[in-house]
Length: 217
Image (cartoon, rainbow, N blue to C red):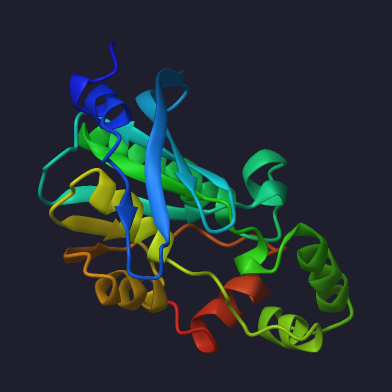
């Protein structure tokens, strides 16, 4: 398994960045082989100039210039992704996305550093405490002075454009994610449902996602 030459060429090309008229720029800066329990991937590191954060794409195969690429856009969830928290379905969605892309033989998981629907780890834990006291996810965020979901997907669109992906099949249940990516000129040819069974700890969270945040379960 080698890193595809197309990714190396992107890194070596000082014009590989995607910028908009607000001087928001994203470029790929490193690539490495990444064998994992889900399959063999290439990890591509991206830098975003506006807040100096680092993001990553886990890519199966060579997707540069391709159409109908299976894509999962996943926002960081330390408690779920790393620790296996049962309060959410984040780990199932991340691992399921990687597994489905491995089965497909080609695709991308974009891993974005926007913890807690964009409010950060500390505020997410504060929201958890409010949920333990009876509030739902949306009510807890609003009690802390935040909207339901402040995640932003312009970054994801720039990452896909940097890779010259022509069209995507998007693994998501979130209509807002679809709408934002389309607003940023990503051609979504199909929404692929991405549903996992609830447990006793996240059932109310998923119910809130469906009934208040309009997720498509």
